[in-house]
Length: 439
Image (cartoon, rainbow, N blue to C red; front, side, top):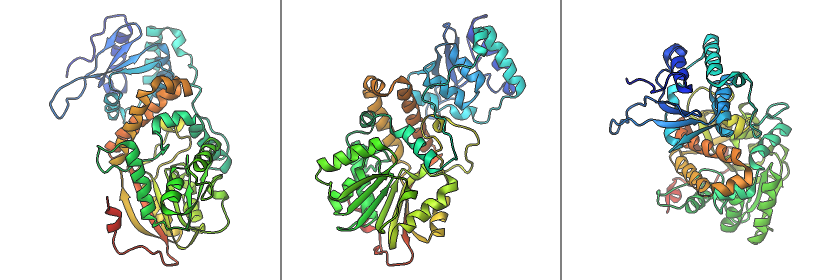
């Protein structure tokens, strides 16, 4: 193993090199990334060999000013790194994905009180006493209040993410404004083609038919309800907690001549009632529900259906058995109060609510493709994105989408469509899935 740095005595890198050898039982002495500091000094990394060709090439992380060090001193770990990335004091040269690929090296590193004191003393020597003061928290960090997963708090959490700018989302998501995993027949498909295929797959799994009442829980900008109304002749209701989404969806439905068959409501799923629906879909929404509300969520869907009605849940599931025990970058900057569960939890809740689980399909490999297409859209329109939502949020979305793609690639996260039928009536499903496999 080669030395961790070529630092010159007295600069920031040399102080960092000396200190990292003394903390965390020396596990940080050989970083998998090269770090370039604001004074020009460089702490060279010791990357693992590429399993494909044995080559070693360290990714480069740049600490642009002392704030990066201050964030890590006050919040060592994911939150400190996130704050430094969001405020721009920490950046990466080259491909951010290469940096993210090294994250597992730090997964089980823990800092004792002694370690943190050593790091604080070293930081003060290298960057001055000002580095010991807590730096400002980026303005876009979420801090929800109230009872977790109450209707009021969920409304605030959802609007933190979705009510930033319809134009920003259009830049990233493309014309369809479909904010969920697409369905690719091949990587040659365009993003729009793959999103259309996903919408149609959901409609076919639900066996939507003319005249049926269809509900989309968490309808976003309305792409699914409009597709279902236009191509399957249903009367569709979409609900969202975002006023900005609802306004755009209503305008688009009217422009497409679907105003008499598509209704968009600003409502929580727990606030719905009235006549039962024939079919219900929930796409990319149950991640906001929370484990404590999962049974209520599924039970509510069952109560909104006619006997034998079908319910399709499309959502991300946690493959790792343990939930995070501390705040994460995603929970503070992207999806406040979002929670992921093993897919078995959802199916157990569905069975308890009176559903018969009829079909489960994993779409895990489709989500990294989708996410990288969104990243490409963001990077192609970076200046416009920053003008719309600011540099902090543009940096946040860049990191969140690439980190998510990495997690799906490594099977840490899964994406499942689960179809259930209320077991108290005829569901009308065919004997085989052959019709779903048509091109």
